[in-house]
Image (cartoon, rainbow, N blue to C red; front, side, top):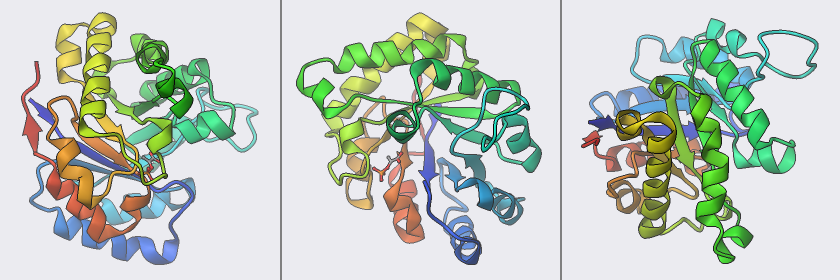
Length: 252
Ligand code: PEP
C-alpha cells in the first residue's frame, strides 16, 4: 500500500507572525487524516515550524539544499544543516529553480543525493513545459529528467510530476493527463529502481491543485498525493485538499 502524501510548497511566502496559527489549525484539523502531511516553508521559518509542529504528525521540509556538506558556497544551505534543525524533507529540482536559478538535471540529482546522505527524504520535481507538451515531447522529457532517480534511495524518495504550464497558472493537468504521466514515471522507476521499489514509490501531482480539483486528480490510481503551492497558503483550503485524498492506495 502507498500512503498518500500531501506536501505544501510555500515558495517565498509566510511569516513568523502567521505560522503559529496556521500550523496549529493544520494540526488540529488533520489529526485523524489518512495522508502524510509535509509543510515546506522558506528557510527562515524552519526552526519555528519544527518547534510548533513537534510532537504532531505534520512534518517539515525545506525547498532546496546544496549537495556539499559544508564549504565556500555563499547563500546556500547544506542538507546536514536542515537535518540538524529537524527538517525531514527537502524539495529538489523544482521548475522555478530550473527556470530562474540555473538548476539542471545534474545539479538536481546532486542535491537529491546530498539530501539523502544527510538523512532527509526528497521530493524530486520534474515536468515538461507547454512547448514540450505541444510538440509531443512530454514522455521523452520525463524520461530524461527521471534519469536522476537511478542514483537515489527509493526508501526516502517521492517524485512530483509538475507540468511547468500548470504551476501557478490556475490551469491544472486533467486527471487523465496526470495519470498518463504518472504511469509512465512508474514504468521508468521500475526500470531504474526495480519493480518493488517502483510499486512503493509515491508520485505526487503538482500544478494548480485546489480544493475544487483535488479529489478528481487524487482518485487516479498512480496519483499518490499532491505538491501544492498557492492553495497551501490558506490553511482551510489546504486541509480540504488533504481530506480529498484517500489515506492509502494499493501499490504494485
Ligand atoms: C508548486 O510550486 O510546486 C506548485 C505546484 O504551485 P501551484 O500549486 O501554485 O501551481
